[in-house]
Amino acid sequence: PHPAFGTGVRELTRRAAEQRGGVFTVALFGAFSAGKSSFASALLGEAVLPVSPHPTTAAIIRVMAPAGGQRHNTAAVKFKSAEAIREDLAYSFQALGLGTWSETAWLEAVRRLKPEDIPAAGRAHYSFLKAAAAGWTESAGRFGQVEVVEAEMFRSYAANEKKACFVAEIDFYYSCSLTEQGIVLVDTPGADSIHARHTGVTFQYMKDSDAIIFVTYYNHAFSRADKQLLSQLGRMKGSFALDKMFFVVNAADLAASDDELTAVVEHVREGLRTAGIQQPNVFAVSSMRAMAAVQGNVANDPGFTLFRQRFSAFLEQDLGNLAVSSAAAMVKQMHERLFKWTEAAGHNAENAEQRLTALRGRRDAFEQAVAEFVQVDIGREWAQENSELLFHVVQRVRLQALELFAEFFHPSLLQEHNGPLKRNFTVAMRGWLDQISGELERELLATTLRLERKAEALLRREAEAWCRRHEAALEMPLSYTEGETSWNTPTIPEGLLDGGTLEPETYWPIFKNPKTFFEGGGRLQLRAKLEDPLLAKLKKIVEGMETNFREHYEQEIALRKAQTAETFRGLWSEWEQSIQGSKASPEELSHWKSILAQIGRDVEEMEAFYER
Image (cartoon, rainbow, N blue to C red; front, side):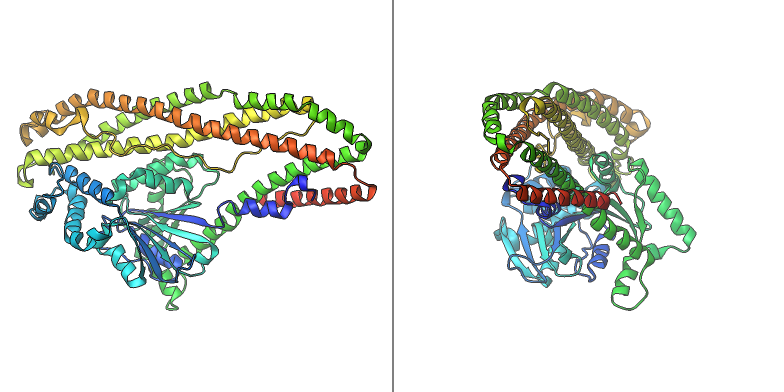
Protein backbone atom coordinates (compact mmCIF):
# COMPACT_ATOMS: atom_id res chain seq x y z
CA PRO A 1 0.00 0.00 0.00
CA HIS A 2 0.89 3.67 -0.28
CA PRO A 3 3.17 4.72 2.62
CA ALA A 4 0.50 7.09 3.88
CA PHE A 5 -1.78 4.17 4.68
CA GLY A 6 0.32 2.15 7.09
CA THR A 7 1.67 -1.33 6.77
CA GLY A 8 -1.11 -3.21 5.03
CA VAL A 9 -4.05 -5.39 5.84
CA ARG A 10 -2.25 -8.50 6.96
CA GLU A 11 0.18 -6.59 9.13
CA LEU A 12 -2.70 -4.74 10.79
CA THR A 13 -4.42 -8.06 11.42
CA ARG A 14 -1.24 -9.46 12.90
CA ARG A 15 -0.82 -6.43 15.14
CA ALA A 16 -4.37 -6.68 16.45
CA ALA A 17 -4.06 -10.42 17.06
CA GLU A 18 -0.76 -9.98 18.90
CA GLN A 19 -1.76 -7.15 21.21
CA ARG A 20 -1.23 -9.58 24.09
CA GLY A 21 2.28 -10.39 22.89
CA GLY A 22 1.11 -13.73 21.56
CA VAL A 23 0.42 -14.89 25.15
CA PHE A 24 -2.91 -15.83 26.74
CA THR A 25 -3.03 -15.75 30.53
CA VAL A 26 -5.37 -18.22 32.25
CA ALA A 27 -5.79 -17.68 36.01
CA LEU A 28 -6.91 -20.45 38.38
CA PHE A 29 -8.82 -19.49 41.52
CA GLY A 30 -10.23 -21.57 44.35
CA ALA A 31 -9.83 -22.33 48.05
CA PHE A 32 -7.55 -24.88 49.72
CA SER A 33 -8.47 -28.49 48.84
CA ALA A 34 -10.64 -27.38 45.91
CA GLY A 35 -8.52 -29.51 43.58
CA LYS A 36 -6.83 -26.68 41.69
CA SER A 37 -3.48 -28.43 41.46
CA SER A 38 -4.96 -31.72 40.23
CA PHE A 39 -7.10 -29.85 37.71
CA ALA A 40 -4.10 -27.85 36.46
CA SER A 41 -2.04 -31.02 36.14
CA ALA A 42 -4.82 -32.67 34.12
CA LEU A 43 -4.85 -29.62 31.82
CA LEU A 44 -1.07 -29.81 31.41
CA GLY A 45 -1.06 -33.58 30.92
CA GLU A 46 1.27 -34.39 33.82
CA ALA A 47 1.22 -34.01 37.60
CA VAL A 48 3.69 -31.13 37.61
CA LEU A 49 2.12 -28.92 40.29
CA PRO A 50 2.74 -30.02 43.87
CA VAL A 51 -0.03 -30.27 46.44
CA SER A 52 0.69 -28.94 49.92
CA PRO A 53 -1.15 -30.43 52.90
CA HIS A 54 -1.56 -26.96 54.45
CA PRO A 55 -1.08 -24.36 51.71
CA THR A 56 -1.91 -21.32 53.83
CA THR A 57 1.23 -19.61 52.52
CA ALA A 58 1.11 -20.73 48.88
CA ALA A 59 2.78 -18.42 46.38
CA ILE A 60 1.67 -17.50 42.87
CA ILE A 61 2.88 -20.11 40.37
CA ARG A 62 2.98 -19.32 36.65
CA VAL A 63 3.41 -22.28 34.30
CA MET A 64 4.71 -21.29 30.86
CA ALA A 65 6.72 -22.51 27.90
CA PRO A 66 10.52 -22.14 28.25
CA ALA A 67 11.76 -18.81 26.89
CA GLY A 68 14.81 -16.57 27.06
CA GLY A 69 17.24 -19.42 27.50
CA GLN A 70 15.28 -21.15 30.28
CA ARG A 71 15.22 -24.95 30.28
CA HIS A 72 12.21 -27.25 30.31
CA ASN A 73 11.23 -28.45 33.81
CA THR A 74 13.07 -25.70 35.67
CA ALA A 75 11.72 -22.83 37.75
CA ALA A 76 12.66 -19.27 38.65
CA VAL A 77 11.83 -18.83 42.34
CA LYS A 78 11.41 -15.22 43.50
CA PHE A 79 11.70 -14.76 47.25
CA LYS A 80 9.83 -12.10 49.20
CA SER A 81 11.72 -8.98 50.13
CA ALA A 82 12.75 -8.52 53.74
CA GLU A 83 10.14 -5.76 54.03
CA ALA A 84 7.37 -8.01 52.66
CA ILE A 85 8.10 -10.90 55.02
CA ARG A 86 8.19 -8.54 57.99
CA GLU A 87 4.82 -7.12 56.97
CA ASP A 88 3.41 -10.67 56.77
CA LEU A 89 4.76 -11.54 60.20
CA ALA A 90 3.45 -8.33 61.77
CA TYR A 91 0.04 -8.89 60.17
CA SER A 92 -0.23 -12.40 61.64
CA PHE A 93 0.94 -11.17 65.06
CA GLN A 94 -1.80 -8.56 65.01
CA ALA A 95 -4.42 -11.07 63.81
CA LEU A 96 -3.61 -13.42 66.71
CA GLY A 97 -3.57 -10.64 69.29
CA LEU A 98 0.12 -11.22 70.07
CA GLY A 99 0.98 -7.54 70.30
CA THR A 100 3.51 -5.66 68.19
CA TRP A 101 5.89 -7.81 66.14
CA SER A 102 9.53 -7.46 67.24
CA GLU A 103 12.47 -8.60 65.14
CA THR A 104 14.38 -9.65 68.23
CA ALA A 105 11.59 -11.38 70.15
CA TRP A 106 9.20 -12.86 67.58
CA LEU A 107 10.87 -16.27 67.27
CA GLU A 108 10.54 -16.90 71.00
CA ALA A 109 6.94 -15.69 70.97
CA VAL A 110 6.10 -18.14 68.17
CA ARG A 111 7.93 -20.98 69.92
CA ARG A 112 5.62 -20.56 72.92
CA LEU A 113 2.44 -20.77 70.81
CA LYS A 114 0.38 -23.94 71.33
CA PRO A 115 -2.24 -25.14 68.79
CA GLU A 116 -4.85 -25.66 71.52
CA ASP A 117 -4.62 -21.95 72.38
CA ILE A 118 -5.39 -20.80 68.83
CA PRO A 119 -9.02 -20.13 67.84
CA ALA A 120 -10.25 -21.51 64.52
CA ALA A 121 -10.16 -18.06 62.92
CA GLY A 122 -6.43 -17.79 63.58
CA ARG A 123 -5.19 -21.18 62.39
CA ALA A 124 -3.86 -19.94 59.04
CA HIS A 125 -1.79 -17.31 60.87
CA TYR A 126 -0.57 -19.89 63.40
CA SER A 127 0.49 -22.21 60.56
CA PHE A 128 2.32 -19.38 58.81
CA LEU A 129 4.17 -18.21 61.92
CA LYS A 130 5.28 -21.73 62.84
CA ALA A 131 6.48 -22.35 59.26
CA ALA A 132 8.34 -19.01 59.15
CA ALA A 133 10.06 -19.72 62.46
CA ALA A 134 11.08 -23.20 61.30
CA GLY A 135 12.54 -21.96 58.02
CA TRP A 136 13.95 -18.59 59.08
CA THR A 137 17.59 -19.66 59.47
CA GLU A 138 17.64 -21.43 56.09
CA SER A 139 15.83 -18.74 54.06
CA ALA A 140 16.70 -15.39 55.68
CA GLY A 141 19.68 -14.93 53.35
CA ARG A 142 17.51 -15.27 50.23
CA PHE A 143 15.17 -12.31 50.74
CA GLY A 144 14.64 -10.38 47.49
CA GLN A 145 16.62 -12.88 45.40
CA VAL A 146 15.65 -15.03 42.42
CA GLU A 147 16.96 -18.60 42.13
CA VAL A 148 16.65 -20.93 39.14
CA VAL A 149 16.08 -24.48 40.37
CA GLU A 150 15.30 -27.93 38.99
CA ALA A 151 11.80 -29.42 39.11
CA GLU A 152 12.34 -31.35 42.35
CA MET A 153 13.50 -28.26 44.22
CA PHE A 154 10.61 -26.25 42.67
CA ARG A 155 8.13 -28.68 44.20
CA SER A 156 9.83 -28.32 47.56
CA TYR A 157 9.57 -24.52 47.45
CA ALA A 158 5.95 -24.72 46.37
CA ALA A 159 4.71 -27.35 48.84
CA ASN A 160 7.00 -27.32 51.90
CA GLU A 161 5.49 -24.74 54.24
CA LYS A 162 8.75 -23.71 55.89
CA LYS A 163 10.11 -22.80 52.43
CA ALA A 164 6.90 -21.72 50.69
CA CYS A 165 6.15 -19.02 53.26
CA PHE A 166 9.21 -17.04 52.06
CA VAL A 167 8.37 -17.29 48.34
CA ALA A 168 6.55 -14.50 46.50
CA GLU A 169 6.09 -16.15 43.10
CA ILE A 170 7.45 -18.92 40.92
CA ASP A 171 7.76 -19.14 37.13
CA PHE A 172 7.79 -22.82 36.18
CA TYR A 173 9.04 -23.51 32.65
CA TYR A 174 7.25 -26.51 31.21
CA SER A 175 6.87 -27.47 27.57
CA CYS A 176 3.60 -29.18 26.61
CA SER A 177 0.86 -28.73 24.04
CA LEU A 178 -0.95 -26.18 26.26
CA THR A 179 2.00 -23.91 27.02
CA GLU A 180 3.43 -24.15 23.50
CA GLN A 181 0.21 -22.49 22.28
CA GLY A 182 1.29 -19.40 24.22
CA ILE A 183 -0.89 -20.10 27.26
CA VAL A 184 0.43 -19.10 30.69
CA LEU A 185 -1.39 -20.95 33.46
CA VAL A 186 -1.42 -19.01 36.74
CA ASP A 187 -2.16 -20.93 39.95
CA THR A 188 -3.15 -18.24 42.46
CA PRO A 189 -2.92 -18.69 46.25
CA GLY A 190 -5.99 -20.20 47.88
CA ALA A 191 -8.74 -17.81 48.83
CA ASP A 192 -8.14 -18.90 52.43
CA SER A 193 -4.36 -18.36 52.47
CA ILE A 194 -2.70 -15.49 54.32
CA HIS A 195 -2.12 -13.92 50.90
CA ALA A 196 -5.88 -13.47 50.49
CA ARG A 197 -5.48 -10.03 52.08
CA HIS A 198 -3.53 -8.90 49.00
CA THR A 199 -6.76 -8.05 47.21
CA GLY A 200 -4.99 -5.84 44.66
CA VAL A 201 -2.92 -8.76 43.32
CA THR A 202 -6.02 -10.96 42.99
CA PHE A 203 -7.93 -8.13 41.31
CA GLN A 204 -5.17 -7.51 38.78
CA TYR A 205 -5.15 -11.16 37.72
CA MET A 206 -8.93 -11.09 37.41
CA LYS A 207 -8.76 -7.88 35.38
CA ASP A 208 -5.86 -8.71 33.08
CA SER A 209 -6.23 -12.46 32.53
CA ASP A 210 -7.67 -13.62 29.23
CA ALA A 211 -9.60 -16.37 31.01
CA ILE A 212 -10.54 -17.20 34.60
CA ILE A 213 -11.16 -20.71 35.91
CA PHE A 214 -12.70 -21.04 39.36
CA VAL A 215 -12.34 -24.54 40.82
CA THR A 216 -14.46 -25.95 43.64
CA TYR A 217 -14.58 -29.47 45.06
CA TYR A 218 -17.51 -31.81 44.56
CA ASN A 219 -18.54 -32.29 48.19
CA HIS A 220 -17.43 -28.92 49.60
CA ALA A 221 -19.84 -26.09 50.25
CA PHE A 222 -18.64 -22.63 49.28
CA SER A 223 -16.50 -21.32 52.11
CA ARG A 224 -16.52 -17.68 53.15
CA ALA A 225 -13.25 -17.25 51.24
CA ASP A 226 -14.88 -18.75 48.13
CA LYS A 227 -17.81 -16.36 48.46
CA GLN A 228 -15.45 -13.39 48.69
CA LEU A 229 -13.76 -14.32 45.42
CA LEU A 230 -17.04 -15.07 43.70
CA SER A 231 -18.56 -11.78 44.84
CA GLN A 232 -15.57 -9.97 43.37
CA LEU A 233 -15.99 -11.84 40.08
CA GLY A 234 -19.68 -10.94 40.13
CA ARG A 235 -18.84 -7.24 40.60
CA MET A 236 -16.36 -7.31 37.70
CA LYS A 237 -18.19 -9.52 35.21
CA GLY A 238 -20.14 -6.75 33.49
CA SER A 239 -16.97 -4.75 32.79
CA PHE A 240 -15.33 -7.41 30.60
CA ALA A 241 -15.65 -7.39 26.81
CA LEU A 242 -16.21 -11.17 26.90
CA ASP A 243 -17.57 -13.65 29.42
CA LYS A 244 -14.18 -15.14 30.25
CA MET A 245 -15.18 -17.05 33.40
CA PHE A 246 -15.34 -20.85 33.69
CA PHE A 247 -16.49 -22.67 36.83
CA VAL A 248 -15.30 -26.21 37.48
CA VAL A 249 -16.75 -28.71 39.96
CA ASN A 250 -13.86 -31.12 40.49
CA ALA A 251 -14.03 -34.79 41.60
CA ALA A 252 -17.31 -35.48 39.80
CA ASP A 253 -16.42 -39.18 40.04
CA LEU A 254 -17.56 -39.03 43.68
CA ALA A 255 -21.19 -38.74 42.54
CA ALA A 256 -23.24 -41.82 43.36
CA SER A 257 -25.55 -41.17 40.40
CA ASP A 258 -26.24 -38.80 37.54
CA ASP A 259 -29.10 -37.28 39.54
CA GLU A 260 -26.79 -36.55 42.44
CA LEU A 261 -24.24 -34.94 40.13
CA THR A 262 -26.96 -32.80 38.53
CA ALA A 263 -28.13 -31.67 41.96
CA VAL A 264 -24.60 -30.69 43.02
CA VAL A 265 -24.00 -28.74 39.82
CA GLU A 266 -27.32 -26.92 40.27
CA HIS A 267 -26.34 -26.09 43.86
CA VAL A 268 -23.10 -24.56 42.55
CA ARG A 269 -25.03 -22.62 39.89
CA GLU A 270 -27.34 -21.22 42.55
CA GLY A 271 -24.37 -20.15 44.66
CA LEU A 272 -22.87 -18.39 41.66
CA ARG A 273 -26.13 -16.62 40.89
CA THR A 274 -26.29 -15.48 44.51
CA ALA A 275 -22.81 -14.00 44.04
CA GLY A 276 -24.11 -12.00 41.05
CA ILE A 277 -22.83 -14.31 38.30
CA GLN A 278 -25.77 -14.97 36.02
CA GLN A 279 -25.73 -17.80 33.46
CA PRO A 280 -22.36 -19.20 34.62
CA ASN A 281 -20.42 -21.72 32.53
CA VAL A 282 -20.25 -24.70 34.93
CA PHE A 283 -18.46 -27.98 34.19
CA ALA A 284 -18.42 -31.10 36.35
CA VAL A 285 -15.10 -32.90 35.82
CA SER A 286 -12.94 -35.62 37.29
CA SER A 287 -9.29 -34.56 37.16
CA MET A 288 -8.31 -38.00 38.44
CA ARG A 289 -10.02 -39.76 35.51
CA ALA A 290 -8.65 -37.18 33.07
CA MET A 291 -5.09 -37.83 34.28
CA ALA A 292 -5.64 -41.58 34.08
CA ALA A 293 -6.86 -41.14 30.51
CA VAL A 294 -3.70 -39.19 29.62
CA GLN A 295 -1.66 -42.08 30.98
CA GLY A 296 -3.70 -44.52 28.88
CA ASN A 297 -5.35 -46.35 31.76
CA VAL A 298 -9.02 -45.43 31.27
CA ALA A 299 -11.37 -43.73 28.84
CA ASN A 300 -11.51 -39.93 28.77
CA ASP A 301 -13.58 -38.21 31.44
CA PRO A 302 -16.63 -36.85 29.56
CA GLY A 303 -16.86 -33.75 31.74
CA PHE A 304 -13.21 -32.87 31.23
CA THR A 305 -13.53 -33.53 27.50
CA LEU A 306 -16.48 -31.12 27.33
CA PHE A 307 -14.56 -28.50 29.29
CA ARG A 308 -11.55 -28.80 26.95
CA GLN A 309 -13.80 -28.37 23.90
CA ARG A 310 -15.56 -25.28 25.28
CA PHE A 311 -12.38 -23.76 26.62
CA SER A 312 -10.48 -24.32 23.35
CA ALA A 313 -13.38 -22.79 21.43
CA PHE A 314 -13.23 -19.75 23.71
CA LEU A 315 -9.49 -19.28 23.17
CA GLU A 316 -9.58 -19.89 19.44
CA GLN A 317 -12.89 -18.31 18.51
CA ASP A 318 -14.04 -15.78 21.12
CA LEU A 319 -10.63 -14.27 21.84
CA GLY A 320 -9.62 -14.70 18.20
CA ASN A 321 -12.78 -12.99 17.01
CA LEU A 322 -12.14 -10.11 19.39
CA ALA A 323 -8.68 -9.62 17.86
CA VAL A 324 -10.02 -9.96 14.31
CA SER A 325 -12.85 -7.51 14.95
CA SER A 326 -10.28 -5.01 16.20
CA ALA A 327 -8.21 -5.61 13.06
CA ALA A 328 -11.31 -5.29 10.88
CA ALA A 329 -12.14 -1.90 12.42
CA MET A 330 -8.59 -0.69 11.75
CA VAL A 331 -8.65 -1.97 8.18
CA LYS A 332 -12.10 -0.50 7.57
CA GLN A 333 -10.82 2.91 8.57
CA MET A 334 -7.85 2.48 6.27
CA HIS A 335 -10.22 1.47 3.46
CA GLU A 336 -12.29 4.62 3.96
CA ARG A 337 -9.22 6.84 3.90
CA LEU A 338 -7.77 5.13 0.82
CA PHE A 339 -11.14 5.49 -0.92
CA LYS A 340 -11.11 9.24 -0.31
CA TRP A 341 -7.53 9.46 -1.53
CA THR A 342 -8.21 7.56 -4.78
CA GLU A 343 -11.34 9.64 -5.32
CA ALA A 344 -9.36 12.85 -4.86
CA ALA A 345 -6.49 11.59 -7.00
CA GLY A 346 -8.83 10.63 -9.82
CA HIS A 347 -10.63 13.94 -9.99
CA ASN A 348 -8.16 16.55 -8.91
CA ALA A 349 -4.66 15.41 -9.79
CA GLU A 350 -4.08 18.64 -11.73
CA ASN A 351 -5.06 20.72 -8.71
CA ALA A 352 -2.82 18.91 -6.21
CA GLU A 353 -0.63 21.95 -5.53
CA GLN A 354 -3.64 24.19 -5.00
CA ARG A 355 -5.26 21.68 -2.64
CA LEU A 356 -2.00 21.23 -0.77
CA THR A 357 -1.64 24.98 -0.34
CA ALA A 358 -5.26 25.22 0.83
CA LEU A 359 -4.75 22.37 3.28
CA ARG A 360 -1.64 23.93 4.76
CA GLY A 361 -3.54 27.18 5.09
CA ARG A 362 -5.93 25.39 7.40
CA ARG A 363 -3.15 24.02 9.64
CA ASP A 364 -3.57 26.72 12.28
CA ALA A 365 -7.30 26.06 12.41
CA PHE A 366 -6.61 22.33 12.73
CA GLU A 367 -4.15 22.82 15.60
CA GLN A 368 -6.63 25.12 17.31
CA ALA A 369 -9.31 22.45 16.98
CA VAL A 370 -6.96 19.77 18.38
CA ALA A 371 -6.08 22.06 21.29
CA GLU A 372 -9.78 22.50 21.98
CA PHE A 373 -10.22 18.73 22.08
CA VAL A 374 -7.38 18.34 24.58
CA GLN A 375 -9.09 20.91 26.79
CA VAL A 376 -12.54 19.32 26.57
CA ASP A 377 -13.95 18.76 30.05
CA ILE A 378 -15.51 15.42 30.91
CA GLY A 379 -14.54 15.85 34.54
CA ARG A 380 -17.94 16.96 35.86
CA GLU A 381 -19.82 13.95 34.49
CA TRP A 382 -17.06 11.55 35.49
CA ALA A 383 -16.83 13.03 39.01
CA GLN A 384 -20.58 12.64 39.45
CA GLU A 385 -20.27 8.96 38.54
CA ASN A 386 -17.35 8.64 40.96
CA SER A 387 -19.36 10.20 43.79
CA GLU A 388 -22.48 8.11 43.18
CA LEU A 389 -20.61 4.81 42.90
CA LEU A 390 -18.65 5.43 46.08
CA PHE A 391 -21.77 6.45 48.01
CA HIS A 392 -23.22 3.03 47.27
CA VAL A 393 -19.93 1.36 48.23
CA VAL A 394 -20.25 2.76 51.77
CA GLN A 395 -23.84 1.55 52.09
CA ARG A 396 -23.06 -1.97 50.83
CA VAL A 397 -20.00 -2.41 53.06
CA ARG A 398 -21.92 -1.15 56.11
CA LEU A 399 -24.62 -3.77 55.53
CA GLN A 400 -22.04 -6.50 54.93
CA ALA A 401 -20.28 -5.57 58.18
CA LEU A 402 -23.49 -5.92 60.19
CA GLU A 403 -24.30 -9.25 58.53
CA LEU A 404 -20.82 -10.60 59.33
CA PHE A 405 -20.83 -9.48 62.95
CA ALA A 406 -22.42 -12.61 64.46
CA GLU A 407 -20.12 -14.84 62.43
CA PHE A 408 -17.04 -13.46 64.21
CA PHE A 409 -18.47 -12.76 67.68
CA HIS A 410 -19.65 -16.34 68.10
CA PRO A 411 -20.15 -18.52 71.21
CA SER A 412 -17.83 -21.19 69.81
CA LEU A 413 -14.92 -18.74 70.07
CA LEU A 414 -15.64 -16.60 73.11
CA GLN A 415 -15.79 -19.18 75.90
CA GLU A 416 -13.55 -19.75 78.92
CA HIS A 417 -12.31 -23.16 77.73
CA ASN A 418 -10.97 -21.69 74.43
CA GLY A 419 -8.16 -19.75 76.07
CA PRO A 420 -7.77 -16.15 77.27
CA LEU A 421 -11.03 -14.34 76.62
CA LYS A 422 -9.48 -10.93 76.06
CA ARG A 423 -7.10 -12.32 73.43
CA ASN A 424 -9.92 -14.19 71.68
CA PHE A 425 -12.07 -11.06 71.76
CA THR A 426 -9.19 -9.24 70.07
CA VAL A 427 -8.91 -12.03 67.46
CA ALA A 428 -12.65 -11.80 66.77
CA MET A 429 -12.52 -8.02 66.46
CA ARG A 430 -9.44 -8.12 64.22
CA GLY A 431 -10.95 -10.84 62.07
CA TRP A 432 -14.17 -8.88 61.66
CA LEU A 433 -12.33 -5.67 60.77
CA ASP A 434 -10.00 -7.51 58.38
CA GLN A 435 -13.01 -9.02 56.67
CA ILE A 436 -14.74 -5.64 56.33
CA SER A 437 -11.50 -4.06 55.17
CA GLY A 438 -11.11 -6.71 52.48
CA GLU A 439 -14.69 -6.21 51.34
CA LEU A 440 -14.11 -2.46 51.17
CA GLU A 441 -10.93 -2.91 49.13
CA ARG A 442 -12.68 -5.31 46.73
CA GLU A 443 -15.59 -2.90 46.31
CA LEU A 444 -13.21 -0.02 45.60
CA LEU A 445 -11.24 -2.06 43.07
CA ALA A 446 -14.42 -3.10 41.25
CA THR A 447 -15.44 0.56 41.21
CA THR A 448 -12.25 1.45 39.32
CA LEU A 449 -13.41 -0.76 36.43
CA ARG A 450 -16.76 1.02 36.26
CA LEU A 451 -15.00 4.40 36.35
CA GLU A 452 -12.72 3.34 33.49
CA ARG A 453 -15.69 2.25 31.36
CA LYS A 454 -17.38 5.58 32.11
CA ALA A 455 -14.25 7.52 31.10
CA GLU A 456 -13.93 5.49 27.89
CA ALA A 457 -17.54 6.21 26.94
CA LEU A 458 -17.18 9.94 27.60
CA LEU A 459 -13.90 10.17 25.65
CA ARG A 460 -15.40 8.23 22.73
CA ARG A 461 -18.41 10.54 22.69
CA GLU A 462 -16.26 13.68 22.63
CA ALA A 463 -13.76 12.37 20.07
CA GLU A 464 -16.46 11.19 17.65
CA ALA A 465 -18.31 14.49 18.02
CA TRP A 466 -15.03 16.34 17.33
CA CYS A 467 -14.51 14.35 14.13
CA ARG A 468 -18.03 15.03 12.90
CA ARG A 469 -17.72 18.71 13.73
CA HIS A 470 -14.39 19.34 11.98
CA GLU A 471 -14.29 16.90 9.07
CA ALA A 472 -16.27 19.11 6.67
CA ALA A 473 -14.65 22.38 7.75
CA LEU A 474 -11.13 20.97 7.37
CA GLU A 475 -12.02 19.07 4.16
CA MET A 476 -10.20 15.93 5.28
CA PRO A 477 -11.24 12.50 6.59
CA LEU A 478 -11.29 12.26 10.38
CA SER A 479 -12.01 9.19 12.51
CA TYR A 480 -11.54 8.10 16.12
CA THR A 481 -9.71 4.92 17.14
CA GLU A 482 -9.54 3.94 20.81
CA GLY A 483 -6.02 3.55 22.16
CA GLU A 484 -4.57 0.13 22.92
CA THR A 485 -3.07 1.06 26.29
CA SER A 486 -4.78 -0.38 29.37
CA TRP A 487 -5.87 1.77 32.28
CA ASN A 488 -3.59 1.83 35.31
CA THR A 489 -5.42 0.84 38.48
CA PRO A 490 -5.06 3.36 41.32
CA THR A 491 -3.29 2.09 44.43
CA ILE A 492 -5.66 1.06 47.20
CA PRO A 493 -3.88 0.47 50.52
CA GLU A 494 -4.32 -2.79 52.40
CA GLY A 495 -5.77 -2.75 55.90
CA LEU A 496 -7.91 0.34 55.43
CA LEU A 497 -9.63 -0.25 58.77
CA ASP A 498 -6.47 -0.84 60.80
CA GLY A 499 -6.10 1.22 63.97
CA GLY A 500 -7.92 4.41 64.82
CA THR A 501 -11.34 4.49 66.47
CA LEU A 502 -12.03 0.75 66.22
CA GLU A 503 -9.34 -0.64 68.52
CA PRO A 504 -10.40 -3.83 70.39
CA GLU A 505 -9.16 -2.32 73.67
CA THR A 506 -11.83 0.39 73.43
CA TYR A 507 -14.70 -2.12 73.27
CA TRP A 508 -13.41 -4.92 75.51
CA PRO A 509 -15.22 -3.54 78.62
CA ILE A 510 -18.58 -4.28 76.95
CA PHE A 511 -17.82 -8.02 76.94
CA LYS A 512 -17.79 -8.68 80.74
CA ASN A 513 -18.33 -12.46 80.43
CA PRO A 514 -19.69 -15.01 77.89
CA LYS A 515 -23.10 -15.42 79.57
CA THR A 516 -23.78 -11.67 79.74
CA PHE A 517 -22.46 -11.18 76.23
CA PHE A 518 -24.48 -13.87 74.47
CA GLU A 519 -27.56 -14.16 76.71
CA GLY A 520 -27.79 -10.76 78.32
CA GLY A 521 -27.70 -8.57 75.22
CA GLY A 522 -24.00 -7.71 75.33
CA ARG A 523 -23.43 -8.74 71.71
CA LEU A 524 -26.26 -6.48 70.49
CA GLN A 525 -24.90 -3.66 72.63
CA LEU A 526 -21.42 -4.07 71.10
CA ARG A 527 -22.82 -4.09 67.58
CA ALA A 528 -24.80 -0.92 68.29
CA LYS A 529 -21.70 0.75 69.78
CA LEU A 530 -19.63 -0.16 66.73
CA GLU A 531 -22.12 0.83 64.02
CA ASP A 532 -21.77 4.62 64.13
CA PRO A 533 -17.95 4.81 64.43
CA LEU A 534 -17.66 2.14 61.71
CA LEU A 535 -19.89 4.14 59.37
CA ALA A 536 -17.94 7.33 60.13
CA LYS A 537 -14.68 5.49 59.43
CA LEU A 538 -16.02 4.08 56.16
CA LYS A 539 -17.18 7.52 55.02
CA LYS A 540 -13.83 9.09 55.86
CA ILE A 541 -11.89 6.39 53.99
CA VAL A 542 -14.14 6.58 50.94
CA GLU A 543 -14.00 10.39 50.89
CA GLY A 544 -10.23 10.11 50.72
CA MET A 545 -10.45 7.47 47.98
CA GLU A 546 -12.85 9.68 46.01
CA THR A 547 -10.17 12.36 45.93
CA ASN A 548 -7.47 9.82 45.09
CA PHE A 549 -9.57 8.36 42.27
CA ARG A 550 -10.26 11.83 40.86
CA GLU A 551 -6.59 12.80 40.86
CA HIS A 552 -5.49 9.44 39.42
CA TYR A 553 -8.03 9.38 36.60
CA GLU A 554 -7.53 13.05 35.76
CA GLN A 555 -4.00 12.03 34.75
CA GLU A 556 -5.17 8.87 32.97
CA ILE A 557 -7.82 10.79 31.01
CA ALA A 558 -5.36 13.56 30.15
CA LEU A 559 -2.94 10.93 28.83
CA ARG A 560 -5.62 9.43 26.57
CA LYS A 561 -6.70 12.84 25.29
CA ALA A 562 -3.08 13.58 24.42
CA GLN A 563 -2.79 10.20 22.64
CA THR A 564 -5.97 10.91 20.68
CA ALA A 565 -4.66 14.35 19.75
CA GLU A 566 -1.52 12.72 18.34
CA THR A 567 -3.72 10.32 16.38
CA PHE A 568 -5.56 13.28 14.89
CA ARG A 569 -2.23 14.88 13.95
CA GLY A 570 -1.25 11.60 12.34
CA LEU A 571 -4.40 11.78 10.22
CA TRP A 572 -3.40 15.27 9.13
CA SER A 573 0.08 14.11 8.08
CA GLU A 574 -1.41 11.14 6.28
CA TRP A 575 -3.82 13.35 4.32
CA GLU A 576 -1.08 15.83 3.48
CA GLN A 577 1.12 13.02 2.12
CA SER A 578 -1.81 11.67 0.17
CA ILE A 579 -2.33 14.97 -1.63
CA GLN A 580 1.41 15.21 -2.31
CA GLY A 581 1.25 11.78 -3.92
CA SER A 582 -2.00 12.36 -5.76
CA LYS A 583 -0.33 13.08 -9.11
CA ALA A 584 -1.00 9.53 -10.09
CA SER A 585 -0.94 8.27 -13.68
CA PRO A 586 -3.99 6.34 -14.94
CA GLU A 587 -2.02 3.11 -14.52
CA GLU A 588 -1.07 3.97 -10.91
CA LEU A 589 -4.62 5.01 -10.14
CA SER A 590 -5.92 1.72 -11.51
CA HIS A 591 -3.40 -0.10 -9.34
CA TRP A 592 -4.59 1.72 -6.18
CA LYS A 593 -8.22 1.05 -7.03
CA SER A 594 -7.49 -2.67 -7.31
CA ILE A 595 -5.84 -2.53 -3.87
CA LEU A 596 -8.88 -0.65 -2.56
CA ALA A 597 -11.14 -3.40 -3.86
CA GLN A 598 -8.97 -6.07 -2.23
CA ILE A 599 -9.03 -4.27 1.11
CA GLY A 600 -12.82 -4.06 0.85
CA ARG A 601 -12.99 -7.83 0.34
CA ASP A 602 -10.62 -8.36 3.28
CA VAL A 603 -12.89 -6.27 5.51
CA GLU A 604 -15.93 -8.29 4.45
CA GLU A 605 -14.12 -11.57 5.12
CA MET A 606 -12.98 -10.47 8.57
CA GLU A 607 -16.43 -9.17 9.52
CA ALA A 608 -17.98 -12.43 8.33
CA PHE A 609 -15.38 -14.34 10.39
CA TYR A 610 -16.05 -12.71 13.73
CA GLU A 611 -19.82 -12.53 13.19
CA ARG A 612 -20.09 -16.29 12.67
